Image (cartoon, rainbow, N blue to C red; front, side, top):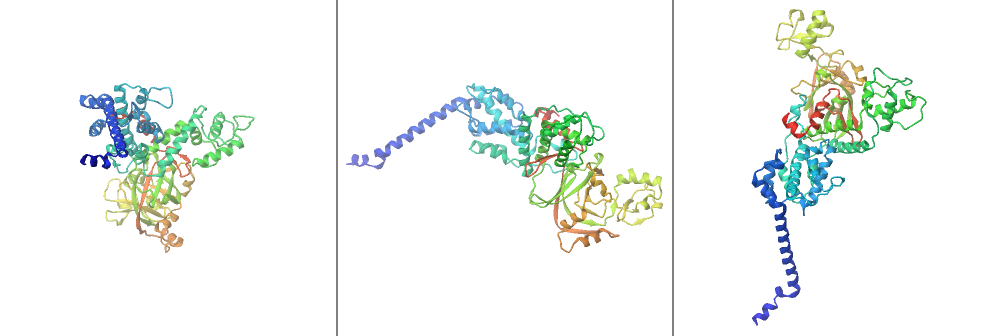
Amino acid sequence: MTNIRLYNTPFMNKKIFIPIAAVVLLAVGLLWFFNQRRSDITDELEQYFISGEAGVLAESDYAVSIEEFYTDREYMEVWLFNGSLSKNGEELLEQIEDSKYDGLQPEDYHLERIYALSSTPEKENKKFRNLSSDEKVSLELLLTDAFFRLAHDLENGKVNPSSLDPNWKFEEKETENNYSEMLKEVAGGSSVEKTFEKLYPNSDLYAQGRKAIQELYTIQKNDTLTWEFEPVEGAIEVGDQHAAIPALRKRLMFWDFLKPYEMADPTLFDSTMFAGLQKYQESNGMNPDGIIGALVAESLNKSPQNLIDIASINMERLRWMPKMDWDQEMVLVNIANYQLDYMKNQDTAFTAKVIVGKEYNESPTFTAPMSYIVFSPYWNIPESITNDEIIPSVKKNPNYLSQKNMEVVDGNGAVVKASQVNLAKETGYRVRQKPGGDNSLGLVKFMFPNDYNIYIHDTPARSLFERETRALSHGCIRIQNPDQFAKILINDKSWDDEKIQEAMHQETEEVVKLEREIPVVLVYMTFWADKDGKANFRSDVYERDAALLKALRSSKSSLDQA
């Protein structure tokens, strides 16, 4: 009876027994499969690390992290499956190829060495079949090192700004991610693309910039023009003839600001080209006067590759930026665009033209909180300007200070007679300009205390805002329509237009503390893409782009040697 009861238990029922047998066979099969994998590349990876030979990781900064990663997972591969690229491997290869849309060089992430291992090197869609054990190990480790390199460069930038740009004054960006942990997530099934997207700067500017660069690469494929710079001296106006006109007209057609049309004389700057040029100037932040000068000719002679390079430079600058909340209230000044924008939730609530530092008094890039406004300000003249400009002027004209509404004060701020002080030899004195319409700071200044003595202020020379190139100051930011800017910052109904004008026209200065601190962010961007995806390019007035482009396009090894 005992045997009969045992036979009739549920575990021995045929309907149950058959699925159990299938599970056992599946488990045995999987064990055999993983043993086969183990005997294929896994053992080779283990031997590679045990041997201690640098090999494919000889120049890797991440060799230790890579070895720890594979040791922890018993040397199981991530990027290969059954002797070819796994889904993860194909996705990572695509990310390496697409890194050009970030303005990076795919070659920095072993793309050519990876392609060299392909069994179909002549085809665009690379396949990896029939690889030897050594080739599989090389491919696996090249991809892993590329993952670490690309992750670092997407988060922090390829180039160290502190070693390249002395005017970059932002805090050094700190690495917030553990790339080994991110790689473990990918090995566990996370998307490579989504993993890298976490490393992008938290700004719509970056996402839109990637799209704009991708579009430029598409345009470049259809580029049949010869992009030679046509020198233009002076100005070419409508009705003039010039040898540069045919090439410049082709540029306007290439960028779709002109449609092809019949013309009697290709060298004539005719009215049709004039209208197309005005559209081009307006689209590129220029005065749409329809006149071809050196700046317009230089801009029109930038090829798609030139524009890709400029965009790449500025994508790197975005990667340098410390993490910040772009949705917050802020004042954003783009020095290269000569423009100030007051932002709320990434929307522009106020915009104004600005004047920035001259080439030899470059305005630095940094961020600091604005905390107060000074109406009818004194201008406390910096010692460097006193020595270089004021003292020589006083020597030529003893009445210079009184004519410029200036006075001398001692260390306590008390006014002293200028005739009793030798500014060239005596210390402890400084020159300041009294409030008034001719004060160099104008009628109001906006203070965000910083180590560089930079602030935003009005100016009596308002006609300068009509200039196309406005790098004219000693480093501070001069703003157009300062009264409107003050009103929107104070954000108090009691401060109406009349009260603001009264405050701006007093004989003594008045300090108004803001009820909150507003971040002021000074950037230098010669390219950006707006919310509509339109690419914007500006002249490199401080000539900072060339050095960054050289560093960005250098190989990793040459950067390390620099």
